[in-house]
Length: 234
Image (cartoon, rainbow, N blue to C red; front, top):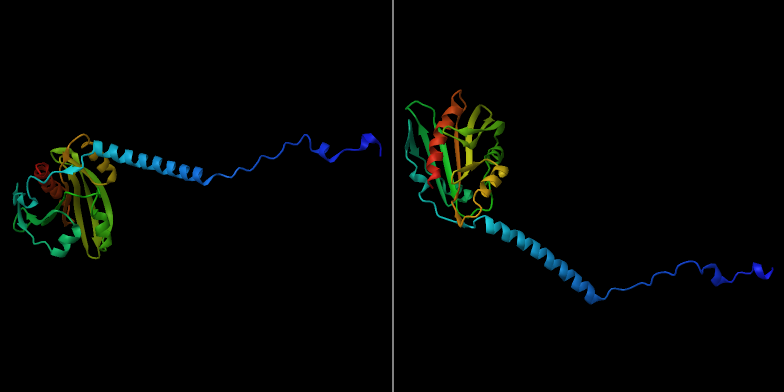
């Protein structure tokens, strides 16, 4: 073999880059990085909570009246108090509750009304009716929202449920001062209306139920409008 044909081993790899040295992170550096990440996350979470609290009032004032103060006579409707079962009262977890039956004549249709008020409540839609009805064996047939007579911006839900041999029509809404909603999307809009205030009114929920008839929805709306007006003063 000629001298030109000899290639020394180191010459074969002289153009190949040397491997990068492996650097082992020091435990102190890793610990500091982890704690830095934890602090950043905490600041972000704390900042979002602070922003929420700075806009949405955390203090809830007591109601100006009890729910039982709603008049027994509302227009052509006359109400009768219904006793609340202690177990049911405790399960709802509200600070105040009221249950009544309203009729506009001796032989007229009966409208059952239940109202609840919460001062401390993180859930924007406590005891959502469709969840409670379905859990108790009712089937939801239809649901829509409609504005109240005289207060078209105050929208409530109208729903029809059925069990074997029975159908009922239900009206319900959640309320904070004059704002109403029936789901979490509506709750966000109402909550934004409370931003910048020092305190807010209690969260109210009103639900009415009657048997299905051709006039059921109009009667529910008629009575609901009067209860809504009372709620605005709470």
